[in-house]
Length: 230
Image (cartoon, rainbow, N blue to C red; front, side, top):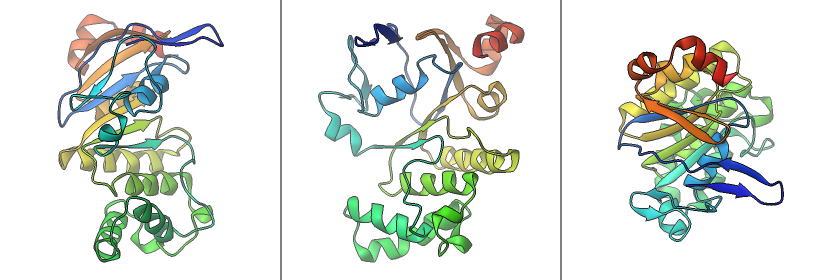
């Protein structure tokens, strides 16, 4: 698939092809501006490819976007996607209502999700008082409300302190253990190595290579990888 922003005369994604297998953690590793976020936006139905197509569970992400959205969710980096003046629990109630989850089901689901991401004891605190790491973990709980098969993480650990990043990675590992398929973008080589079953290295909109950590180490010297992602 290719995505060209004509107003900027810029090719953000350049004729890329890759598969993601059910149940794996797949990483897009590259520097800022490499095309990672644009790729995720196409796959999560937010953008249409200029040329080519993208498919999720055999549904076209542009032509069959409504069908795709039933099976996916996303976690963005930074602190977007939450209402700061609501408590953690109130945020999940609000988004549950959007997903038309019954009140009876919410009373079981929300405590379970808050417990999973380590926020149950902070459920009555306003989100504005949460640390960045806590906000990210609440976003993960929010992303699980519709029980998606596939979750997109776009630079989800950016700006987190080491403890917050470690807790976030632990939750991602737990999601993978539970059978979720995960696509994450990062410009941290160590994060990709720790989490991903396979990694695609992307730069200037083009995927340079795809493989396991071991396969990439055999193809490209680590020094060259670090040079690419800087």
